[in-house]
Image (tube, rainbow, N blue to C red):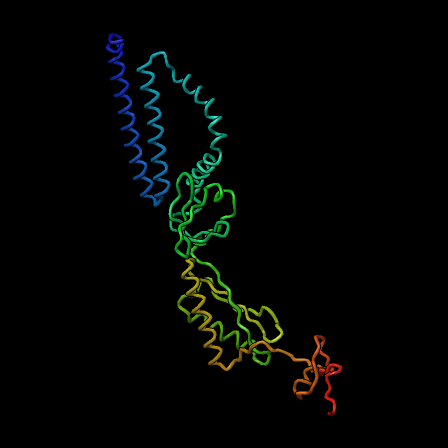
Length: 299
């Protein structure tokens, strides 16, 4: 055994050197890949690709070292054996492999970037990280949510910050007696004076509906795509429109409620001794009769 170990000493040393060299090359290339993609403002892609490069070179180093130390071992035979086990591993870790593949596809396609605000199956927030298993989202309420990459890849994905501007809508009701064109002009001037509202595309005011109590004017305006900016723009726009309509003397009435003059309403207004029914009619209030035998008798 000692003679065999001495004879195998050079091969073991050569295998260890090969393993160390390939591992070092993998680390170096991983750092280069990471630095290059970080310059392109893709930190998640850089982290994942750097890790993949290190793993590939590490696996290559192990196969090369095993071939050097054990000359009878052929890489082709090792890979064929791994192919059999990979089928079993694939069935056992199907969900993990699915998320891994989906994560790689998301990183290559790049439908969103770090810092984008997204909506995935009702989860809304800012993308913090995309790794090989999940997409990390920080919700607007400050919660950290881990969404599997397969869910992000297969379902509908809304990227709110995908473009430079988003449109917001608002509704303002005016009285039927008011001049619609004047109200439209006042609302447009108020929207143009609002700093948070973008001039391009320009805002617009359209009559959306003739309601029971008001003529509803629909306000359409554009703002920055971030959720906070959208909320601030909506607040500023509606406040400016209300001030403009108030200054112009344009009434914004409340809902008009019509009361039907049923007999029960009339009886209630007159305070009659009557009892109202659910159908709106009235009936005489029943009086309690004394029980039989309870009347007083003369002594």
